[in-house]
Length: 388
Ligand SMILES: [Zn+2]
Image 1 (cartoon, protein in one colour):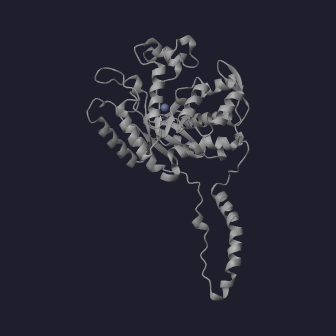
Image 2 (cartoon, rainbow, N blue to C red):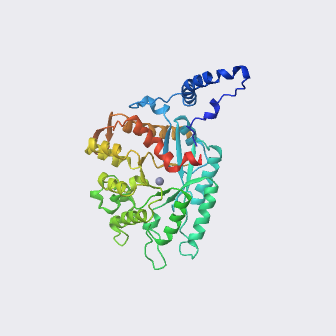
Image 3 (cartoon, rainbow, N blue to C red):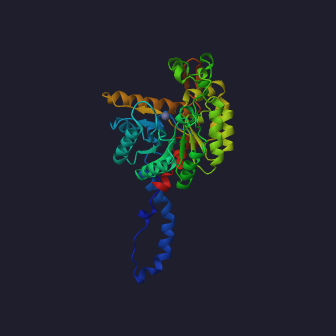
């Protein structure tokens, strides 16, 4: 992982002192004390030539600041995305999950390990666990042993996916929710191992609303009625999903947790704030950007205040899926443009168009807060400094 900490050892001089010169030691020592901070400063700048602490960043600073995208899904061993990340000074977390489509979970993990070997400075990966064996007596033991193996292979976090709560059923054909006692055993293990959990629990609230009441999901759920929970009242409700997640956090107060997609509370900053207040180790990623833009469109001051109040709990991420391509330049351009557009929203107060609504102003967050949501909060959650 990126090492921003100075190596002070490099600045300790090797001096052999003859008796004649011993008198000079206090003088040299005083000189050394004066020079140390200057040298340290220069050493720091030599490693990170472009970073100066600014009150506000600009568009020009995009390529000069180290940034972290905590929500990426890589489905190919092609390195084009990583080449662009290096160019844009983006580090990232590749998240493996147990989805029923696309590249299977085990293949996702193989790709992650393969890329990690080649680009250990640029990326980390999060593993997950399967539930197809849920009804076997030793599910907990199997799961923990799989996780231990994954940590040994470099995984730094664990993803828990919406299939728990929305798909998985127990031997009585009841839905298994995320606060199930068997999952507790796994979460107790993660807490002891100091490994963070990333939770994609439930779906956006839109999923449970009629099409005409949705904010951004009409197209998706219109095309996928099978996933549109409003049409399936026999499934757990939105509130059931949120309650189960909250209950899980209540039972595991020492678990480092990041709720993916604004913790599925994208529709209300108040509801999200309540959870962040109630669960001090909960963070959320910012992957529901249209919702954040809508909050900003409706009330710029209030949205900006939310970012300031919860600056230690919000983590930048895009939920980008990287698939194999024979047009690498297009892929790189698309990723670069997306990162750049989002930087504009957080860093400047330039006009930004929100389709279907109108124009809003960017949040223009102070540089200190940008550093947190774009790097430091991810680094604390994933523990770069301790696991480096
Ligand atoms: Zn995702």
